[in-house]
Image 1 (spheres, one colour):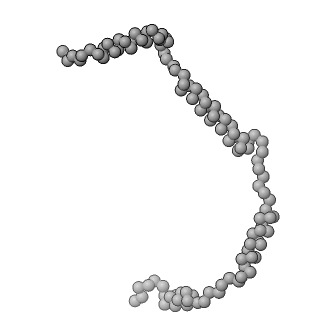
Image 2: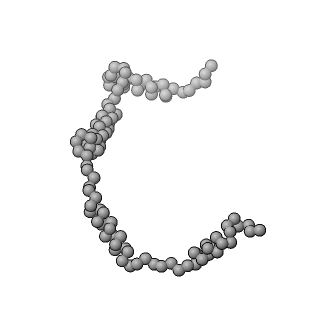
Length: 112
């Protein structure tokens, strides 16, 4: 029995096709193809560029402006100090710092 599912005739045909001489392309084929492509490109009209308010460049510019404005507002907000309580006077701040230093200088005692 033949373990190969192809018949002997198909195997022989495949061998003959595999080893047959292959002719090369004619030398003028490359130039003909290049000329045909150049003619096709020359005859193809350029795609129309959409204009008006739906132009992609317009929306890209709008997005860039919004991005810059948001960044500037975030930068200015990060430099502003927000506090829920009233502003602290410099004298009060000095007194609080002095109290903290006194507390830190005291020896630690164990909890009872």
